[in-house]
Image 1: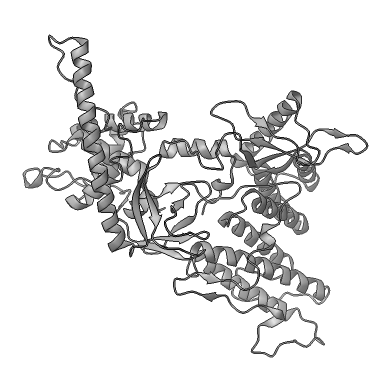
Image 2 (image 1 turned 135 degrees about the vertical axis):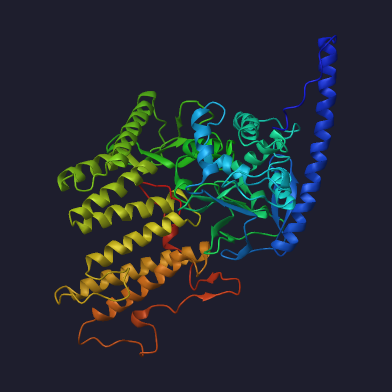
Length: 577
């Protein structure tokens, strides 16, 4: 947007004169933009001191623009900041102005190609004077005006991100073009004669590139001032969540040193485990930039894209090692690294076979998204598909998704042991594909324990243990309940660090842990005496995790040792919650 400058009059002027004038305008514009950004950094730091208790500060980066740096060290799980939204807007229902906007978008798909909610966010960000003040009667349902100080902060979220000192990439040019054409159309349609169309376009761009999902029904979005200056990486140092009041809570995923950049993922926990090309494409479509983090660097091994080696080892038959795809550069064909076991380099035919098999599995997954296989496949058919997936993929996100669908199909048939085995493979993949703390990994662990407690006759999601516990197999059931309890505690340890004890995910897990502990007690042999006095934790369970003043859990014993285990034959990504 900032690159769209008024072109000087060409009447009687040569092309050289026009180029000279344009260059001077660009230089003046560039200096003004740089000065504006410097002022914005000061304004952000003022907000950091007042809203974020001085936990972070804003600085300029040569390759990223404005970033946030930590003002002190944070341990994993520590709360870094907690801020309310600068603005929050919900999609209106039965609103005359919004209906008008919807019809306008339907009639002008070339000029207004986005979902109407995006243009509604921009219209919700103009001031009373820009709406026409007391001179103009507003149409029914038009968004209420905002304070000029709020609008200034919204504009800061975009200003300087795409100045002429840093060239626009393809995605940024596309976003700027969509926003630029929307401004004049909206001002004309809603008679906003006091609004500069470029200003409205800038507000639209600020929302598109910086908003967060705020509510689901009705759809709502919010912008948070200080958090919006954090950069994305696929290996983030912090994670955010919204509390019940809509406040933005930021916690450290791992140790963060003083003066270190605080980063988050713009992707969900599930998508964070996907293969690099899909992660980068999604970021380009939604945020208009190509990720260049360490996991997205061309030529790097993609830990979510591992195939079963097709080479034959003399005297041993087919190799059982893993061949990982390498992160491609742009639209180049995918390349493959050496086998982790036999160290062979895939031939051209083998590489083509990997790509073909991957495409077949993705087409199968697409059909399952439209029509899930649960209730449609027999146990024999499910087993055949599982064998085919295992024969071709070792540590691949698509295999992980396939196992999720097939586990659900097994559950539909009441085949709990087979479902548990597939979910266990998903847990192993997610731990191997993304070695950092992962919400997706924790939630899959929770699912694994859920299936186990259902299989032994107790309902982990309820407040009590069901009475239908049979006498036979008591010791075996008790062992399964203890294993489910261990898995629940492991998931809880991860989620406590990522989201804190008061988060909905942790609250549910606490209830499940209590239910399974009662199941373990119920399944004790009648002649077996407890080793601890009644006041102690039953069955050798550890005391509840202690909690720091900032809400972070301190774990006793080795941190998540089981989660760090690597997988011999497969890895998988994680998801968003």
